[in-house]
Image (cartoon, rainbow, N blue to C red; front, side, top):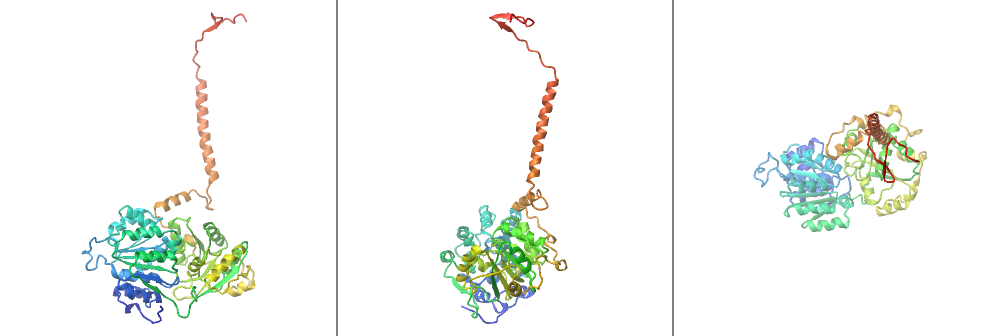
Length: 500
């Protein structure tokens, strides 16, 4: 099912205030997934929406949600059974995606009174509980924190009329489907349910059949693009040596026309190390991975969106919610685990109709894995090209200026950097994590040796105090004890030495 008609959001049965808010952001014409979803969703039917990453699924479900809910200034709000209780629930697999969805909805709800609340882990409970007490009309959150607040009776799901499951395939990968089912069983049976995902694994389809009523399956595609990866994304695959990857990346980041760039790594340790290495080479880079507190993660995302850094080194889970239209390049520092991970990685570029470049660096031991991914996605370049940081074809493919080396010239270091973006105090687990970081050195390493010396000094002080008390007691005159000495049963005078 495809859509090629040029429409505007004003052509749909949306509130004029929502259309005006979109126009304020320069959003006037819907993408295929949006124009196909809106008529069905606005008629209150269940939907299974499938489209490639970066095609605008968020507004596809977000606009019908906002169109239906009532805000405090709307007629009929006070007639609701429980005014202020959430009327719509949007479940996202990651914190970053929940934040991004909330931001998109807030932009579209600028001229209406509906209130959007973000409920996710990593932040203190108290501000989220306070928001719920004041009243929230649309809740966007991650499964774990939603269930926590529901069990604590702070989140009332009894008035939910619309449920949206965003990135359902990622919830499956992260093991969240049981939590999602817990939430679905807690909301009223009479509701509208919309499920959106880039891919549709069997477990997701099974869940949809169980909790949805005669859903309409929508698959938005370009009739001239039958590939699984968007045709706006140019894919390059190189076989690289792990000892040369840092230099290769550093030179590639100096390609002409490069804008915001995301580098994906397989592990949190690699993400942190590579971000530090790129900073050392003069690039405005930041890391985004699970070992960072929520405040640090949001700081890196804000700095990236605001252009204070132009290189974000991220792991897969942490980067799932990155929705930035100006990302021109995506680098896979290591081959992804499977084809779904690859789709979501490269889908961070070429968004909103723009062009993008996706570069994958394959280690020698990962060549077999890449072949399986390429075959599953029908990618032409099954065999990666052996490439080094000085390879001429690398310079030609990415349009790297001749003579470029692995350090950014000082004249090009114009970005403000990560530290220019303020880190928020979020409380909760994040506050504890930052407290631990205060005990670290400038290089971020734990001062284990110093702590050991401190413990030794403490033990030494205790020992000295013990010795002082002993010496003081020895200075006092000892009390004489009377003893009776006997020899062969006879008492012997103490002054006498006996008959020895």
